[in-house]
Structures are given as structure tokens and as C-alpha cells.
Length: 127
Image 1 (cartoon, rainbow, N blue to C red):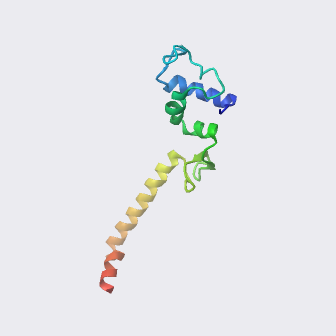
Image 2 (cartoon, rainbow, N blue to C red):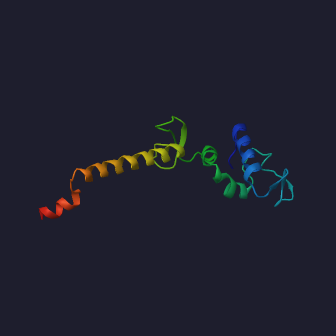
Image 3 (cartoon, rainbow, N blue to C red):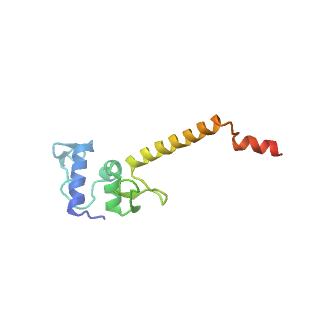
């Protein structure tokens, strides 16, 4: 059974209050009592583990220790890497992808304007 520290518990309580469909005014609709996950440091509620906790991947990785903690190459914010190739946080990844796409398109446009044939057409002439 996983035990949360006080910072993890406070983040979990905020997540429960904001996202849990079974939470209503401090009460758990399923258990028909007070929400025991909001008052406990251990992970007791299965719907919380399966449906609410995955919404905050950083908290989930912090509790379960999954993934590798890295630093974003752009904004230097700590991130939980989902793979060994991940270099950017979610916000920076979108900006970097768009910038690389712009650069690639500019290069292709400039190459076409100069009249240089793409590489795959040159290969056909060599055969």
C-alpha cells in the first residue's frame, strides 16, 4: 500500500474536490459516508486510483515513483519523462514541434525556389 506525504495528500485532496465524480460536499456518493481518501495518507479508494489520479500524471508518478524525473531543455521546469527520449515539458513540446515544422517548411520552400530537385528524384536518374 502506497503512503503519501503531506504535500502529495494536499495535491490529492485538491484533485479529488475538482475532478472526482463521486465527491459531493465532503461525502463520497459510492460509500455514502465522508470521503475517506480525502482524509487518509494511504491510497484506499480504487476509483480515485483508476480514474482521478491519472488526470495528474506528475502526482501519480510522484506517488508511485514511475518514470524518470528530468529537466525541460527549454524552460528548465522539472518533468516526469514518459519515455527515455523526452526532452521537453508538454507546453514547450508544442512550441518546439511548431518551430521545427516552420523551419522544415521554410527550407523546403527555399529549396524549391532555387530549382533544386528533391533527393528522391535524383536517385531515379542515377539508375
